[in-house]
Every structure is written in structure tokens, then in C-alpha cells.
Length: 139
Image 1: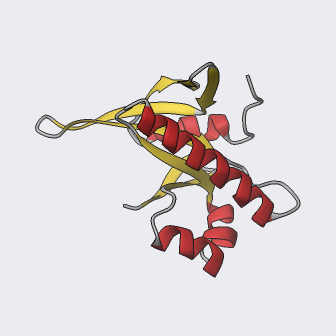
Image 2 (image 1 turned 90 degrees about the vertical axis):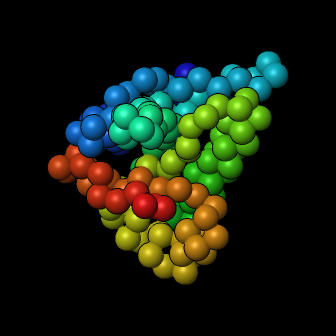
């Protein structure tokens, strides 16, 4: 099993603080003979009428020497996981969890804005000190 991201437990607690129940830690995926795992699986009741919302979350710290390189790696994993989730017909939305400083330095500039505008990636932005979810993109 790969090493956990430094914000793994922070995001886990932030989701729990936001009313989510962690269902998987990690969330297993398999395609053919290859086994992979997304960091977290979670769910929460929306309302009696709408049912349960289910998500999987890949946590990324962006602590490398290059934000662009970290983004390339995170997007590669995200796209791979999204395709496997689709192929396996898993009814969960995939999110990439990033800290508020990472969001501010990567996703508020043109490079990140292109990804958000074209809905390439869904984000959970969290505050690592308060262990709180700051925003969901798309909302």
C-alpha cells in the first residue's frame, strides 16, 4: 500500500466534521489484475427524499519542488481513478482534496482555472489548521 499523504488524516477529520461518514480508508479499486486505491470513501444522508451522497477522495499535499509537477501527477491519478470508477460502475463522485494554500497558488491562476472551467477535476478545499472543509468545487 502506498504511503499516505501528509494531509490524509486532516481531510478524514474535516469530512467527518462536515457530517460525512468514512466508509473506506482506503477505497479499493481493481481493473483486471491491477489493484489500486483511492485515499478515502465517504457518504452522508442528503435528505430522506434524495438519499445518500457517496464520494471517493484523493488527497494531495503539493509539497514537491514544483506545483506544476505535483499537479501533473495528481491529475494523472485523478483521471485514472475516474476512468476505473466509471468502468467498474461505482456510483460515487471522485474529488481531489487540496489545502487552502494549494488552492490559492495552483487553482486561482490560469493553469488551474482552465481545469475548473472545463470541469476536468472536482475539488474539496480544506483548512489544515481547523480541519474544516472550506469549499466544494463544483458546489
